[in-house]
Length: 354
Image 1: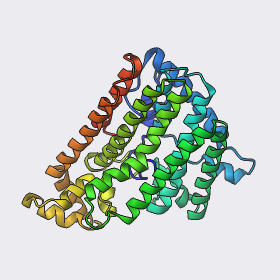
Image 2: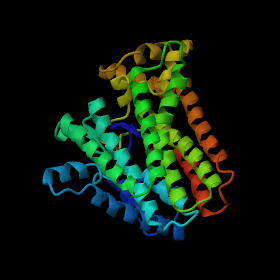
Image 3: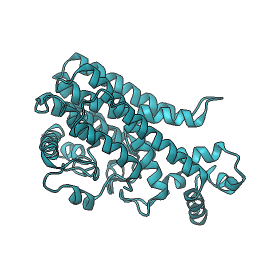
């Protein structure tokens, strides 16, 4: 619920090697990550997060430990911990609570991926068999529940306000998933509904990650508020860019080919613009994307038409608008390397190709 579907790009081993070089954090997030002392500080923080994640998914029962560690060991962007650690650089980044909060957010994200894969009947996650395909749906659901429990255990040490923030974040995650499953209400704008769902499903946990990192580092409440608002906009932008990459990418880095959304009949923003429009130039495309495209020839036709469509260009403009809105939220964030990195992330989300 809190991030990309199984078929959206999540980074592969080659990317990890590219960015896991001295001075740069061990993440598959790309070139926006700073080098030098700030990069070294983030690398050290991420190392602490990884150690804590491994501890959090450990179990005396061999099978439980294997299932719980399945997605942790598969790697990924660590988007939420990176944002938590970066926000913490504006205060006391060495506070133990910062790492614990980052782990809580990542565990929550990973737990939702186990559940997402069951709902989507996904076979692949991060280039490896999904938990539900490796074992079965029951194991995947229960393992996600286990990770939620471990996250809650860590939260208890962070205080009642942190528990309340996380509970409200989780409510938004679940509400967003329900609303996506049910679809827009009669008379509701499908595009507005879609963007609101993304804010709940993805933006909310990304926002809480930045909020926790800054809050537990002792950053001023005003700056915490700005970082929280910034991160929600960036979270939506990141999901939008994932969905656009599924259309324009040359190959899937998660083990699936581009155009999987089209094949499965999942209406992302460009398709919603096609379906809502009446452009004669998109008449054939509108006919094709109104249903799942299981026929290879029709799928290829639709993907080609969508890549050159005005609706794709329009969706790209929306992506840019979210990045711009995120930048505008940084008004009270002090000038310096952290703000520059946050600004660079806005540029990265609109230019990334994986």
